[in-house]
Length: 264
Image 1 (cartoon, rainbow, N blue to C red):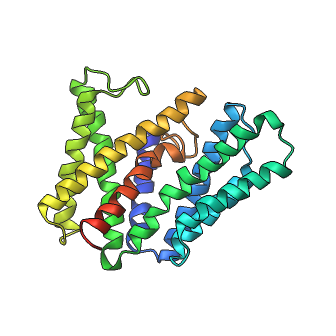
Image 2: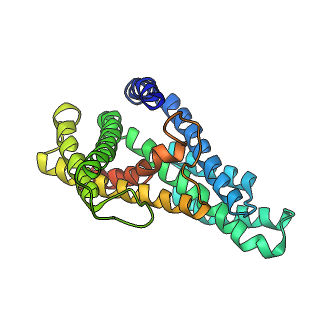
């Protein structure tokens, strides 16, 4: 019941945020979600007993996120600069020398994984007149894939997909992919008339595949820390990373498909 109530409240709020809220509000809420994701990531590193340089991590993530919002700042430029910031933080911190390598590595990866992937939603939202509908379609395709994978896996799932997530099956994975492709076609008719049916099918397949990989990637991080959920901020749904893991991989996939294939 808690899961359903959270969804009933969250989905209308999300639709309003994507479709009707001014872009600065959309970016501000997305930034807050990114910070929660990064917090949950650093919580996993604490479980691993790795003293990540969290202050440097939050600063680096903020710089990356800002580069997506202010288009004149190239995101790629922050990758080497971020490495310098984190390494300097390691020099002036009090961590043990023997922990410096894992601490800096964990600190660098967190911002790239959260801000570096979630920031693509800003780029998508800013694509002329169809940006809001693209973002909403992305969420719908991801949700369809998750729902389809769960339903098909529950009904006919027999063969294990991967040891990383023992409840996921090959049958469920294919079911999720089909659902993603079908809902992408639905989005074409109701939100994205600019797409052809063929474009919609390919887009649904791409996002469906990348979304499932994103889900498994986050499961890998949780398995490493031996936890079930990344957090508990969303009642009945776990942590923010648990809700956005598929989106983290789906967002850049959609952006580059729209950019290179649809020339937008």
